[in-house]
Length: 331
Image (cartoon, rainbow, N blue to C red; front, side, top):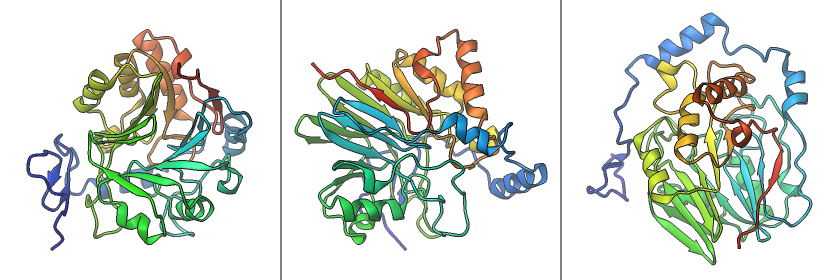
């Protein structure tokens, strides 16, 4: 039987067999079969209200990589890129046509990737939140390793060997709350309520996390995939204030099945408010149909949640895939 080589009995999210969420497991045996049966019977997810071509015209643009000023790009789904003092940091880049181990089966990309790896300038760091196929894409990582062999990969516990098998020479793995300092940049792995799995035999053998990326004058929290949890408020209290957030607003339906691993827009809004309403990128929507909601539903539900909370939408508006926002340089 496989034993967790990083097991620390003093840490609640560690087990001898892998990792776990401190929160109670909400799914029951048989729930996956029940969900799949119900969504198939209901014909879910449905296409966007005006069809996929119109959705792409509304929500997609090629990424503009010009200039040198500090900037952040949303590259679709959970992929985010930062430019900080000329250093490029790529987070959860899943740019292939499917979020799947197979090229012919699995969730298919419904909107184009706004950039190609071959078009990117020099990458300094690649940050990974967990090993699900919509966040850790083997084909994209292989391209990065070939084009940027000196890039350093920041990953949660249990993923070093996976990257080394692909030829990565610089991989740093961290547990929750651990940090790595690179010059003036801090990379810190943070708790998230989720899980990991790439095969039938490796469930929860690697950790999942969010990330804090910070330098003087800049404090960014990328939550990764996460269900609602008190530990997220702890992050705000311990590490805020933040100048930038990336919070998931998709793959939440049906709530009875998804709530333990993906927050819904209303929960994301409450976290946004608790963090002081900084500039926030709504992520984890618009590319792959992973749950029962349509691709165009998260922006609508997000807008409604902001209105119900009495919050201005200015800092938590849906971005176009490929959209860039210039950042104020640190002092």
